[in-house]
Length: 423
Image (cartoon, rainbow, N blue to C red; front, side, top):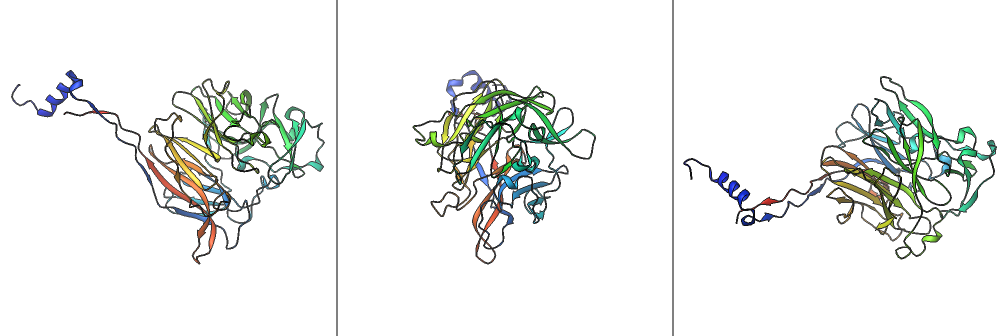
């Protein structure tokens, strides 16, 4: 051995020359760290009505601050687009460590498009107020279903037969170089798309996540599409000004996992979607309804939403599934009802998931007693994100339980590569 040759370098050379002599050590295990909960907002004492102080949504504002918006009206189509008198947002200037109350009048930053525009779509905050049926001249309906919450009838109409005010995709755009957001109604080309009336109003609903594809197009998996309970994948190649049907996911439930699935008249709802590193579009789908807890399903598309795998059960329960792909490759999933939970796919594929980590203690067999079950995810760094959720039993300063909106910071490390270990 030459004089002065460092011993560690010799070990590396031997490991390269004789790999069998230096077996691979197991990869470093991923680590997950959750901060203590931080209170963003809480309802007044005695406020137990459904819809109030729940349904959180995390966003970045254009100046970098974080906004957590939440619902303080009734959970009804009649409340869509209605601004409340009381604050319905918390704003943080320090990464989520402290919050001040605000009204949700300032638009979030939205999705930055390749042409420099910013876009908001597929969300409740760009959904216009529902129009009273008495003020409309409606075409012949295509049928009615009875919803499972309150046994309310949903009467469906072909989208293309509706008046102009009831067609298209509601959105808001901040054009490149401009300072004011503009409300828009994009064209929608989907011959099977339908809209419904309920509670004597007709809402203009098109809800789902926006995904920016590598080719610059936009993909959105949205609901509700029709009385059949399917969801649609729509694609835009003109920065959101028009949307075309790519494909659909039919309601094909697993009757072994959910024997009452055929009675769930609304089928798949609340799709959460994300583009994976290899271009696969992954979507998770809710089936929980007024009949009771239903499974959470997953489906995949390898071709930008044109074709889909048969939906498969991934968890026995869950509403409003949220997906986030961190820059370190880890895929995050959150959902709730009962409670609120978060899980991780450390290989980023979403085929295997860690065990659920509960965020809310459960106090009752009533799945709506402890949380609305809706969560929201916002990345902070390559391996850190905020998660927002509601807890209906958080003790206030007086010890009395209140409905509360909370956030926690979560740090998750990806599994490390295997290392060669000398004997």
